[in-house]
Image (cartoon, one colour):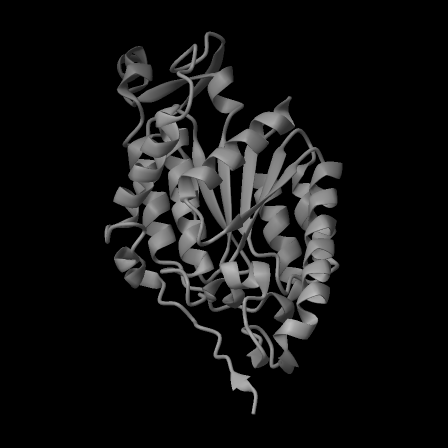
Length: 314
């Protein structure tokens, strides 16, 4: 008789706070540890803070760096404005996270789901961006109207908003149920990001309709940079089952009984072909793809993502 493999739907939502990333801690503390690990291996930047070319003003938002307050505006207009610089406005980071049901998968060798790991990466990237005085925003793939994102903003209050949204995330939607919505998600991100922005999409790219590939990767056009981060569970990367197994899809009703040892080579070939399609599409729009395992050291993944951003810029 084949072994029945139940696809684990890992606890997310508020229980994300209890996921062990080396020590049980909130996402804020976990992201700080990963960021500190990244900084420990990075070279110190030659220039800090805002650029030298004045790029206009915008209303003050709690959490903004007080060094860039335009105090004269309080006297003239009775309201606080923040001075912006071209080097700041051109480095916005937009986090785009897949919250579809397949992201809830958690294999036996890891402590958290793919969505939990993607949330950790997103929170760490947000922390690094805030430390560099760069604005950050958050959107969801396949969960429009179900999950709240975060409008672009600066400072540590913005980091708190992003983390709050990530901690409330739950992987409940099915991407194939409404392919048109993915196009609307992509259009929304395009409208909300300006030229020079870096968009990081964290997804497993599983069960994404074929006709959505173009609309998603085209977000990288118009002077914006798109970096795809494919987050897969270790067991998905290797098909680490043995013998007869029964596999059930998290999205849809597909159920397959097979011999994992016999189909592993073909599975790995198809997985690589699938990933290559997304990689080629990203590169054709000036972007990059980074593949990651949810069982990896998050510091190493963050370094690869930032290297991909630097490489695409170069």
